Image (cartoon, rainbow, N blue to C red; front, side, top):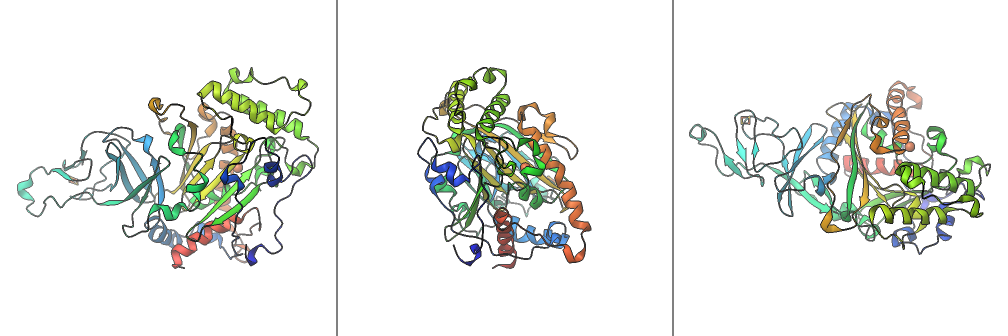
Length: 469
Ligand code: FES
Ligand SMILES: [Fe+2]
């Protein structure tokens, strides 16, 4: 593990709310390969100025050395189901048309006309040509020239005027792009994700809900809000009766090429901060009710009679979820561990991909700078569900958009999670503001050594990109 873990305390647990490693040890099912793995890396403490979150020069460095050089999550294959369908992937001032150019073929084309630069595509759309709205230059979906109106006046324009491309590659139904044509393959950036997600194939899932939210905060602040569970007690104070926080397990996996962070925050246990004032049984009952509430009245009717189960606990909530999901989605989850049925397990792939493993909280995150202002960003979040029959794949949900001052709670499709997101969102603009008004001598991040190590990892990644370390 190296020197950086010396003196590190790996979480705080209590009798009613043990550390995740102890919860995993008492799971009712064998653990997946992923859950058996322990991290092997801890970031070194580093000086991280608040200014990296608002400084325009720093944002430009990120644009040059991160967004133009790194593999990044663009969209899901299912967002563009038919040949010719396209998704506009904007990252800061950059823009790419992610297009299905063949049955199983994708391209990431620069979204700028080769004539006089007009943005070619402004909305998710389809069709068998890409056509500039200004003078009507046209390209085929593979980026080759289709037609130049008034070609007689452009002797300098020939078939070499293909739309330029970024690299594109797919993993688990997710499309990643890299504008750097010389970059190493996506596989290098995926790190341990490939092995850890082998049993949890995201290609066999579909997007049930999808929302893009504008936020008045730097993209890293949004990411950082999801990289630790330390904020749960204060920010999500109304969830501590049935969610862990300080007992969360954090790991960083260094496979020699890339470092990948992970957290596992347990559900159906109380916060250890309550010091056993709420019992594990009470927490499990609350968690079951909350999961049922998210699924609607029909699911609530299926809840067990708690009075008849004196030791009601995580394994019972997990079992009820296996049965409910089988009835609702037709999927067999009988072998899936309690942890993967209940807990929030989230992996990072910097700069912008948050992959969640398991049915506890099956989300997918994407963090993006918005335009040129480092004080604004876009957070794209999805809820994924398993596909029972690959031949009857449900269509992906359309994108819903939330402006700066709009709330997740205005979108009923997010159920109980909307409230949690809105709690997180409410912090972000004031974090951004506070960072900019801090006293000079106190304007560096002060990170918890264990609970906030993934924030340190994010900055380590960025520094390595920017400084070429
Ligand atoms: S700018 Fe695109 S056709 Fe003229
Ligand atoms: Fe949160």
